[in-house]
Structures are given as structure tokens and as C-alpha cells.
Image (cartoon, rainbow, N blue to C red; front, side):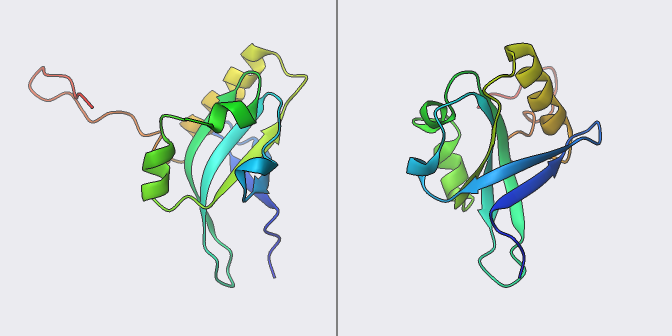
Length: 124
């Protein structure tokens, strides 16, 4: 049976990032770090689909509360949050790691806005 307590993501650079998987908001840490909204298959295969990568400069727990992408993530079936605690990382390092993850395999909620058509920018 696969280990459901971790999720490994690969950034555009090829670097691997190992996230601890939390299934309850109360489990989220009060420190800086990276996070990923996940939709985990509850079947035997245990496949996890990343929906959104982000970073918290001070507290992952506080960052998730009221997150702008949370309702969209719920509509896509989010049922876990992966966290990579980085309490000692500086903000530039956190930003670099987040950019590496976002530039990796596309997630539905990190996707850039649609293309500009006929000179009119896409508006959400």
C-alpha cells in the first residue's frame, strides 16, 4: 500500500520537494514554508493530483485561512494539503522554490490567465 503521509513534487529545475500531507486544517503548521492543495484518490492507487502550489512567508496555517484559491480548490475536489516546513528559509529562497514548483508540471489553479485575444487582456 502506498505511503499517503507524503507527496513528492518535481520542480522545473528537476529538484524534488517532499511535502507532509495534512488532511485537516488544524494540522497545518504555524511556520513559513511551501504548500500544495491536493486532490487525493481514496482508492488503492492513492494517486494525488496537485491543484495549486503556494508559499507562506510566516505561517502556513494563517495563509490557508481565507485563501483566494480555496473555493476553486474545493470545487476541484481538494481533500488534503501538502506542507513543506521551511522555518529557517529566507524569503528569497522560499520565492525561488515556489517559482520552481509553479514552473514545473501545470496545475489548474497556478495556470496563467488565458491568452490575450485581439489586444484585449483576459479578465477574471
